Image 1: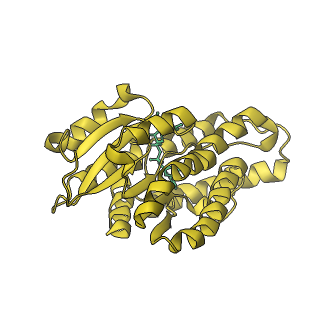
Image 2: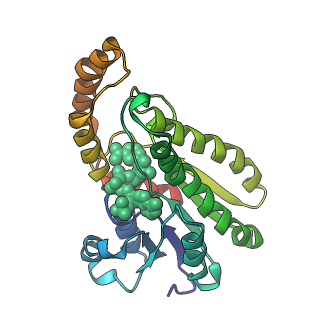
Length: 249
Ligand code: NDP
């Protein structure tokens, strides 16, 4: 349970990658300023987080189940927070999807939007009334450089992040009146399971419907240069977690 001086921070998607590191870094804050509610859709995946949290687990870091694609799970999770009082919401959960549009079903595309767009919208809608009442709060959204620029064969992922950018830019103006901040973080490539899965998907990828020049560009120019950029400039989940901490301080 948070003590009176601590800010309550709820983070989505803490089973791995960036979310896990944000949860641990905030829970281990040198001045104990945060009580972290780390959430994940499958609590069976908690071991990595619990191990990384060490002795702060059960103290400044507690766990709750949360699937951002489910209205019921979102409502229950926020109801489980004392007085539904969340000072800082960090929308981190996200999924990728790679491939030519012709090879992806509308159902698969909808799943990406359910998580990356509606997952964020659901969370914001649930915490906003209390934040407005208290006239304070900070909402963070983990976007991507792909929320700013389209990338070949990432059409659907990019679209989901663009949609979220538009939603948040519009909403931020309305929240300002209530002293609620809304911040977007737009990482470039980060070494996580997300990126590993993307590389595996690329290796298996087929290109039905895509024209030969685009495929050649993707394989011979875009991918090798991305890998070079990644090797030279790829960030770690800790880099993004530290950046997030700075944004909320
Ligand atoms: P990971 O795949 O390591 O982590 C994604 C997290 O989201 C996992 O905990 C996953 O849970 C969770 N998640 C997925 N769907 C749901 C859901 N329906 N409800 C709750 N949690 C869910 O990826 P990253 O840490 O790299 O990604 C975190 C965020 O950063 C994403 O929003 C991503 O778009 C963004 N990003 C990542 C970049 C990168 O290069 N890695 C670059 C730019 C932005 P589970 O274990 O259950 O699948």
